[in-house]
Length: 325
Image (tube, rainbow, N blue to C red; front, top):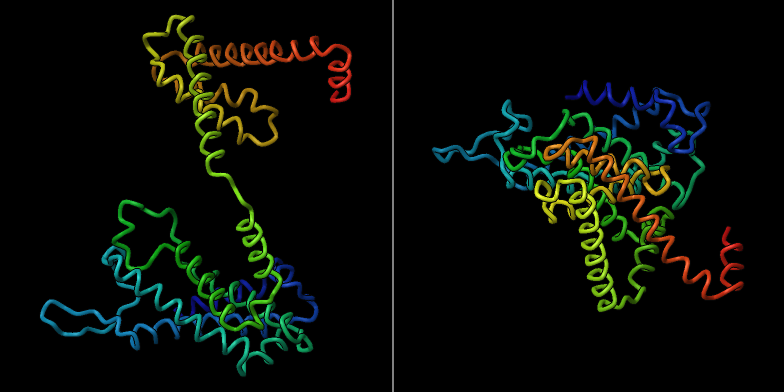
């Protein structure tokens, strides 16, 4: 484990991306000294994590009632439970509480800033740099245990929580620690997020209007789906494709087209998505044709709704259209 942490810290210290992330001058930072700093943070976190298991009595009791030695990495990764995962998160949080004060306010602060070539950095600027180093070291440590995809069927039997859960929890604990030490909480990258959240809380929303808007939009999408079903029925698939299926396919196709960034109106993407969903019940070529016909019908309907406004209002309406163009 120690060798793995040492190799990880070496890769981080030699990465050209890391100095850019920390806003450091690569010429002023000695790679070996930087590696020592990252290794110290990671090793301190690891030792503090294991220490927490013992002081918080995360012991394993065998069937005969004998307390056995704690094993951090058992051979079977799915021999755990939600309780063991909670203990791991507890150990992560307590380790963060032990490492952060030593790094930001303890004896390690001055040497860490010197190893980063920023010994003259004071106040919250130094706090921000060291806190970023902490996150870089610890989050990289967690990612080394990210072994491919997570099997959600057995996630409740893992000994350790999935790495994304551990990362999120450590960030929350670090933010809590910063909040309890006000001089750190004033950092711009914490403060900016808090101010954005506070601005959202100040917005007064009319819940009744939101509910009515959501209901109206649901009805609108239902009517759109029925229109799509009428196209399919006109092609002879009224019995094959039910109205409910047409409504669902139309809604999902619209969402697929909406998230097709860079494609105006999701043109082509929406139709292909709908055809893919309808392929099990009808030929995909005809499903694509139905999607294209439905697109044409919608465009014609929108133009038809524009015409009364354009001609009833006379030249004023045409002038408005010309100004938009």
